Amino acid sequence: MPIQKYFQGYSEQIQQQIKDLYDSGNLKTYLLKKYPNQHNINSDKLLYQYANDLKNQHMRKVPQLSKVIYEKQKDLITDALGTHTFISRNHGGKLKRKHEIRIALSLKEAPSEMLEMLVVHELAHFKEKDHNKPFYKLCEYMQPNYHQVEFDMRLYLLLFDQGHKLY
Image 1 (cartoon, rainbow, N blue to C red):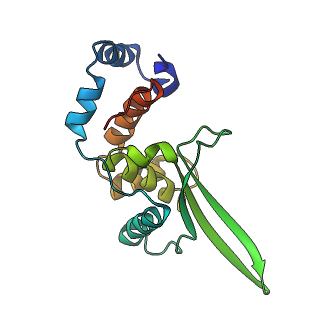
Image 2 (image 1 turned 90 degrees about the vertical axis):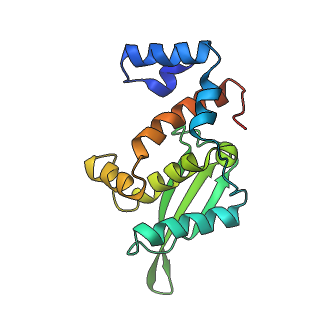
C-alpha cells in the first residue's frame, strides 16, 4: 500500500492510523461520511466556468483564465493532479499572457470539496509561485478548511490507487 507515496513527511503514528483505517476497510466509509457529495462538473466548459467563478470571487486582479481542462492523465514529470501554466506570446507587437489550468481526469468523480481544493491550489500559483507561507495563506483564504481537505485528498488518492471508487 503506497502510504509513503502520499504521506511522506507525516509522523509514523499518523501513517499507522491511516494504515489501520485502510486495513479495517473503513477508509471509504470515513470519506463518504465526510464528503457525501460528488461534484457535477463533468465537462471542460463547466470546469472553466467553475475556476473562473472562484478566481473572480477571490482574485479579481488576476487576468482571465485562457483555458481550464481535465487532462487525460496526471502530469508524468511532476506526478501532479493539477498544473498551471503562464504563457507569454508576442502578438502584433504586444505581449499577450495566457493562464491555463489542467486538472487530472481522475478528479471528475471526486468530492466537490476536493475539486475546489485543487482549483484553489492552482489559482493560488498565479499570485505565489512557490509553496510558501503566503501561498498557503491565500489557499486558506479561498477555502478555509484547505489543509484538512488536502489531507483527505491524500486518503482519497490512496483509495483510488487501490482500484476503489468513492461513489
